[in-house]
Image 1: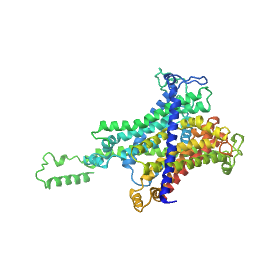
Image 2 (image 1 turned 45 degrees about the vertical axis):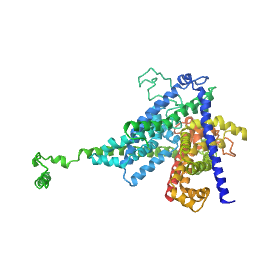
Image 3 (image 1 turned 180 degrees about the vertical axis):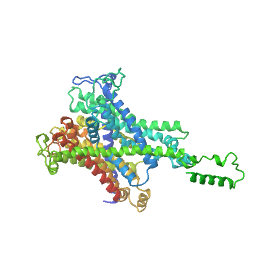
Image 4 (image 1 turned 60 degrees about the vertical axis):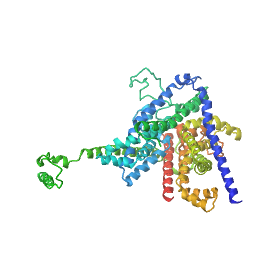
Length: 297
Length: 330
């Protein structure tokens, strides 16, 4: 067999494997959307889920997912932002920084079920919070912190060094330079990073099963008193999210229309992820355009 | 105090008296009015600086404390099986007798350990050729728009929640496996096929990075020697990227090993030593997910589950260590 023939065969094999992967991709995403989207009616989105009859919706799960996402970002964003600024701007190149970086890597590769169980141990059992939105949001924060930190760090590092030097030349402190020059310049990248991590948080279930719980309490959307147990804003009530709902109805549920509910919910989750993925960059670019006079590269 | 202040005053006066630039007038400055405090204390900028550095350092410390707490808490509960309940470590690792409710001689996790490793290794073995092919395709064969489309599809694949993969597994893979191989359709093979799709984008994107990091000159020199594209790929590109491909595969394996829900939905959840690929089995993660809610805190069955969690944690650390090791060598 000569070299030219081998070359052709190798190319053929590579194209063949790539073809399979592409078919697989289209098959998976198509399957989710085609089986799920027809079930996404207003009724499905706006009615309560049922525990044993057919025809239940996902209203509470949808709200819980969004509420948990919001709380998680509220808690994790300041911490991740601080950590990222330190790593990108202040951290000296020594063993301590190295240790911190390794720590963050370890945290990011921890299985989410382990993070969830830690949350269960610390908040649900030790602190006596019980299955609650707060415990869930904290567990998701742990899950989200490493990714968010490294996303933001990348964004900050992407700001040209000359911009910092301009700030120092004006006599600004390092901190003022970071706040006034580096962060605004890095904002589009930071927003992209936040939205991408939000997509991950939105679909996470393993970390929530034993923290936010697997069942929802009765929720009253007209009760704005956050200390009332039936209020939709109460952070101490147990809450089942969309992803947990899919898992729950498939493994322990007894409703007859399991497939309809799961297919609809899966499609909704995937659509949200698609919007987050493509929206993240678009929004980042748009903000960059608004903040600066520069053209997008 | 007085001495230092006088010295400073002196310095200022000297400076003003000796000034060599006659066109600059220091009319408004009277040496006696110099605010020595402002010259000797930290400036506003320094205070800002300390505040900012302190604040961001606090965030870093928080993350550090968090990881220590996770390892500490899970470790404490995981070791309770061996310390409080006196289960033999070797029994735990090598016995297949899993019935922790029956006492300390029935806490063998070998079946789950073997299954966990089996699905992880099989998924990585299937995914690697596909990942390398896609990565080669994206870096060596095509460029421009087609790469971007493939890339964003891959990112989408990463973004799909694991329960959705589990659900597709139940809907599509389980019936398919049942139709082809008989049995229930739940088992290692089903879990492997799902994990294969889940680790594919992880391994692919890291492999793409590895190929992109190879200097163009290497490829050009190879071409100048008369090598075909495949010879260049085989002898230059793959060889230069070898250690980073290994890293990519380990990252993929770490993801597969820790994946809980998708596996739990597809593997059948029977704690048995798997005797073939289509018999129901259980992994460490699937057992944790399905049983944690059914045990009482502090009892042996519960502690045994925490030991499984500790094992997962340790494996995650091992995967990290391997990545570092290869990074250092490569």
